Length: 339
Image 1 (cartoon, helix red, strand yellow):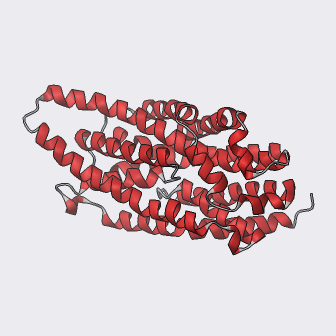
Image 2 (cartoon, rainbow, N blue to C red):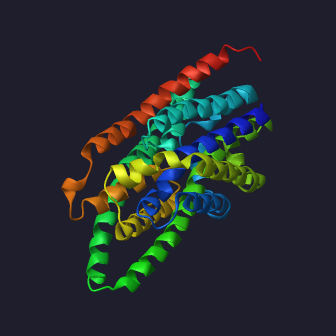
Image 3 (cartoon, rainbow, N blue to C red):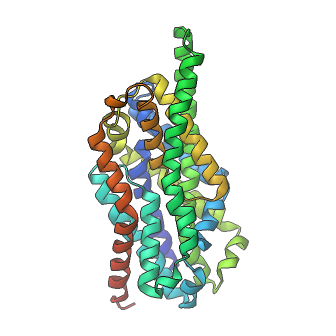
């Protein structure tokens, strides 16, 4: 079952990369700073590096801060593996639905929602650590895109003031900085996203060895091998399916030029890196979308496509409960399969 858990986990990481990869480079591509294929390849490489280089605080949160790992592990290795596989499958179903509809919802929150639904279906309401979910997931889900919006709005005003007498030379420099910021944003995204998937896989690894949640911090091979494999799957997903979200984030919300592209990327990097350090499993997609909205409203609020924004907001609100329901249904169906 451990092998199956790892395989399904890597498939989930692939779908997450396919779902979110395009949002990372959307503003860079639509502002014509980089060609789509070059931007996606750059993002894929950075995703892989980020999964290996940027810590494991988010992974720890996924193991012990969302559901009661003790309750999951108490049912034995079969239950823990069933939980992990069902959580991954429930997440993938919702991600594929929103990917097909080109809605930049949160792949991160679909996995968390699916975990919550699976845990409630098997171990009851008390198996969910609601205080942690409300603080680290729900509050962060609300505040992170708002932080991206505010930073995008303020940093664009600051940039416009600094470069109000800038020449074409500065335009070229900003373009170069945007390429660097795209790489750094993908680096941060790779770390945050790969750790989420690796955290759920970790439960299956502990169960197969008869371990407990506290043992997760003493398994040195997990952050290196499993997280790097998750990062590789994310990178491949971004490079093969990341084109679907580019237009929605980079063009449909508001038209992005070179200056706005750089500022939106910089704002997103700051928010995602703070979340990585704090162990908050936030949605990079929501942060990026919030930053794009911030730079879009800086001087032209009416230029925003409010219709698409309402659809995105609806997807954000629906993701946790919808993925939770999907996860609960999947694990109930899986329990009917004789093993």
